[in-house]
Length: 164
Image (cartoon, rainbow, N blue to C red):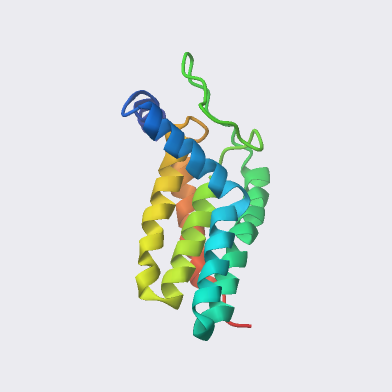
């Protein structure tokens, strides 16, 4: 499994790199820091859909909350970030801990919860996937960090109550 993870990481760090794609991955990564993109998207949806306002606000709060839970898991697992000789990361990271990816956890948690509010929100999974795949593309996570974060996120998105 470790060899596959490393091979996939090396592939993602050496293929499909253009200045435009790298810039997009970096921008998505910044937007995903602390679950910010999900916070703003949830608030925007709450403003647009008064009938579901409470549920959208819970989705908005879930992004940052998922980041906090994710960090607790990181402290238990203590997996260091990847190091590929000759291929330094193209972006920074808030800690030296890698598993699970906080960007993937928050993204998939909120996308899952949003889909529970409205099936049309399934489009959020496209954003969650793009944001998450950017992490190994930039060299700051192993692919398994993203997979683990996505699974944790889906679980959170399924169990969070969408009303108070």
